[in-house]
Image (cartoon, rainbow over all chains, first blue to last red; front, side, top):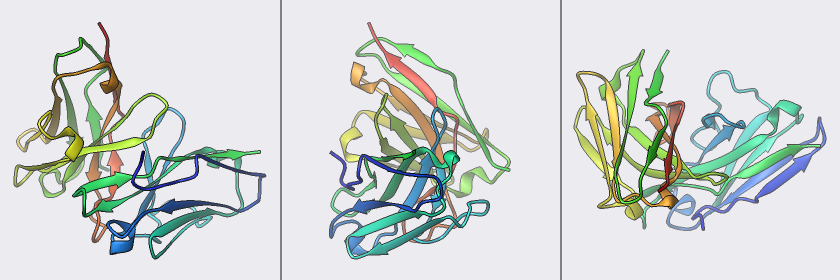
Length: 111
Length: 122
C-alpha cells in the first residue's frame, strides 16, 4: 500500500486530455514537500517528467503539466498521443517516515 | 552527458546477499546524492536509500534498515548497494538514480541507470 495514492489506470483517445491524481497527507504533500512525476515506458528506466510540482525538464513537451494543491498533486496530459502510453509515478517525501516515497503508479492507455 | 551504468543481471540463492554497482560518467559524481530504487515484477517503484558520495553518508528507507548498505567510491565514481538476507520477494529490477540539482526542497532523480535484474531463487 503506497503512501501516495494514484489511480491504477486512466485512458483516453488520441488528442484528448487525461489527468492523473496523486493523493497524500499532511506528512508529505500537505506538509509542503514538492512532488515530482516520472514516465516509465515499457522495459525502460523511469524518466523525470515534472519536477518541483510544475516544472518540465528540457526536452519534455509542454503537453505535460503538473499542479499541486493541499494534500494532492496532478499530472495532466493534453493532446494525448500513442507514444504517451506508459506508467506514470508521482514522488515526494514523507516526514513521518523520513523516506522518499512513490505513488503506486498509473498506467495510461491510448485508445 | 551524465550516464549511470549498472552491473549485470544476477541470480541469487535465498538467504544470500547481493551487491549491485552503478558507475557514473560525464558528470561530477561526488556532488550529488545517488539513490537506489527497486521495482518488483509488475509492481511500482520503491525507494531503498541514498548516499552523498563526497560525505560518504547514507540514508536508508525504514523497511530496509539493517538489511541494506549503500556505499560509494569517489575514486572510481561508483556507487554500490548491498542487500542481505535475500528472499524471493527481493526479486526485482534495481535502479540507481542521481539526485537532480534542479530540485529544491525534495529529492528528485534526473538520471537513471539502466537497471539490474536480480532474481532470488533456489
